[in-house]
Length: 184
Image 1 (tube, rainbow, N blue to C red):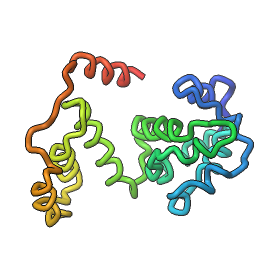
Image 2: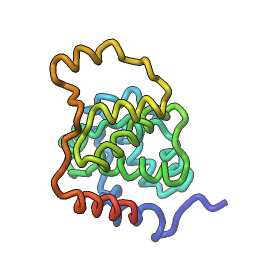
Image 3: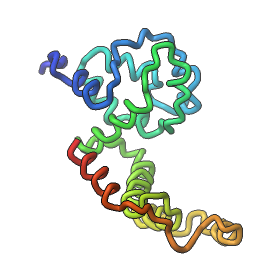
Image 4: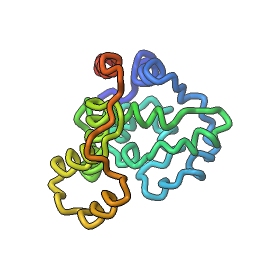
C-alpha cells in the first residue's frame, strides 16, 4: 500500500480549498502552547501540522478520525500567535467537513458533531442563530431531552430564549451561500 500522495494529493487539495499552505509551518509550537484545549486533543495543533506536512495518507486519515478536529473551538488564538499567520482554525473546519464527507468521524465526537449539525441547520433556516431551534435540534439528535432543562426557565425569564426566530431579509442569498458550500 502506498502511503504517500503525489503532488496532486491532499496537500494541494487543502491549499486550494482553504488557502492554507501547511508547508509554511516551521514547528515553533506557539499554536499548541496557546491552545486552550491542546491538553484534551489527541494531536495538538503543531503535531496536526506536522502530520499533514509528511504527506502521508495514513497520518491524514488519523487526523480525520481524531477527536482533535472536533475539539478545536476556532478561537483563533493559534492564528494570532503564529509567526507565519497559518490559519489553523480554517484548516480544522476543512478537516471536519472532510471527516464527515468520508464518514471517518471519531465516535467520541458524536455529541460535538450533533451540535455542529444543529448549529448549521439553525443558520441555514433562519440566517441567524435561533437558540430554541438549536437546542431542540441538538436534543433530538442526541436524545438528551432533559439535559440542562433546569436552566431554561431562568433563560426565558431573562429574555435569552426568544420564541420567534429572527430571520435574515435576503433568504435567497443565504440559500445561494449554502448551495455553493455544498458544491465544494
